[in-house]
Image: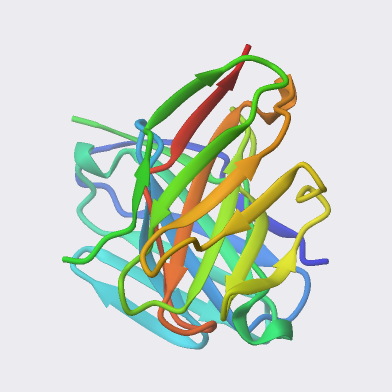
Amino acid sequence: KNEVEQSPQNLTAQEGEFITINCSYSVGISALHWLQQHPGGGIVSLFMLSSGKKKHGRLIATINIQEKHSSLHITASHPRDSAVYICAVRGYSGGGADGLTFGKGTHLIIQP
Amino acid sequence: EPEVTQTPSHQVTQMGQEVILRCVPISNHLYFYWYRQILGQKVEFLVSFYNNEISEKSEIFDDQFSVERPDGSNFTLKIRSTKLEDSAMYFCASSEQGLTEAFFGQGTRLTVV
């Protein structure tokens, strides 16, 4: 069973700061997802990656398969980035039928 | 942009009652999932569904749970006899293929009283 750990659990920063959220997992995976959960509860998929790096706007996600580690970066952070950021991984078995294993999430607050 | 829709957004039910949570996955997606999140805890996998049958299920998904795709668009989660500990946010998700990106609905908050 994969153990997914995120750090930090809580992060408060000032608007404009560069944000890094880390995720590590214990067992090899086929893909890693970064998700965003807003106070209302809905979950939005930000990235799915299995190697290298992806960029979307001010968000950058990287993964190091050998180290079993991924990071989510936010450049020029803004109060609207305040949310819970969740890392989730998918294993190799089942061709995708097995569900995602989630981390506990990082609660990010960006202050104006 | 296509999205996964869930109804209702909030349901309150009495302990022992049956509830059905409904989801409309994205139309060309083939894999469907239910997850739950108890307040303050992490999201947990319940079940996956492909080709009109359950593909995988977690230990949480016991005999009181069932899933169904009654027609070409809906995907439902039924809880037969709700318990207080079933109170949670339930998320439906779908993906085009098993290993592609999953898209989540907004969730149904179930409160069992």
